[in-house]
Image (tube, rainbow, N blue to C red; front, side):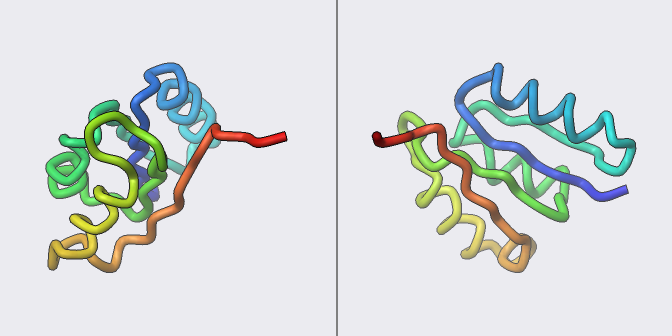
Length: 88
């Protein structure tokens, strides 16, 4: 089973992603709603993939990704950025 870490400051987003991904039976998902806790969560959970919100309070997705890339245990973990920001 593949492991996915979802990091987003909106609990409804992480809850929906977790429910949808785990319903397939192929993924074990851990949700983190605080960008500052993302690195520790990734070190403990050891995900195969990280879904990372771009815009979060305090530390944005780019900051989190930079810290992940600087960590020898996590630098090769794929990261997909998510955003709900839409322009017309």
